[in-house]
Amino acid sequence: MQRTLSLSIPFDYLTDEYFKNCRKNGFGAFELSVAYDKYDCLDLPKIAKIARDNGLDTRSFHLPFQPFDTLNIAGLSRELRGNSVRYLSEWLKKAADADFRYAVIHPSGEPIAEENREESMLGAMDSLSVLADICDRAGIVLAVENLPRTCLGNCSDEIMRLISVSPSLRVCFDTNHLLIQAQLSSMDAVKEKLVTVRVSDYACANVRHWLPGEGKTDWVSIMDKFDEIGYAGAFTYELGFVSRTIMREHPLTPAEIKQNFDELNERNPLTMRGTHYKKLGKWDPIE
Image 1 (cartoon, helix red, strand yellow):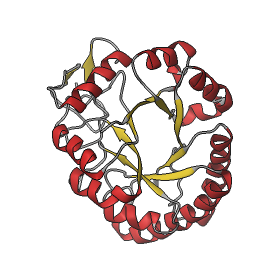
Image 2: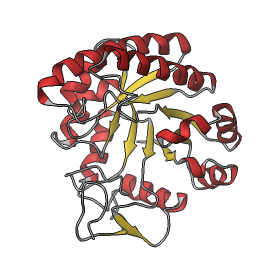
Image 3: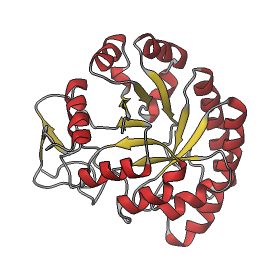
Image 4: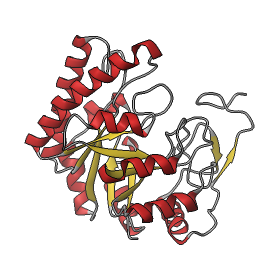
């Protein structure tokens, strides 16, 4: 089944030269996703034009989601949720004006104490209902991303409950985020609402954003499942080009990512590009 090769491009790579390199290597789309302190530096119309001039679809825009004490649509404070909705609403309108097709949203920050989970869930659902209405008027589709650890949406039951507040809400599936549910069962559960996929590998114990083949994901089963459920959308690599948890000789290149994409689709052995540190902390290697 044909899927569109896409890439989540970091801020420092948002150049005409890099977009040209992506297109040269078979990419058809990109996702705009930057660190929280870079959003105010973005010129969305300019970036979108560079992408389109190089033949790349402005597929998805990842909404900011940090810092959690000032940006959290599931926050326990009504004021925090309201401020977050207003801030994200402005970015949704900007993304729609720049002709991005989908906006990806994190349904919560973290950590969430178990005794606060239901209240956080209800707050997030209320926020998503408002944001979905804004998206409907702006002409952009809002996709809720599955998240790891204690975040909301850490299993398909929660994702489906979150999006139940609006018929226009959809799902972004991240292959690297599931820690308490098997990937295949989650894919089956969300398949009818799935509109975009973020691709990376991990050791199934925490988020890593490694290149497929560098972790423990069973990629043959994953690719077979994508075929089975009929997913033919964007296959967006979200990688640590220079990872803090794996050693690389050089930053990953579009050509290397394209090779990985071809290996996945052809069910060939995956080329390793990095070497694991012997010990890993939550994010960084332990010396």
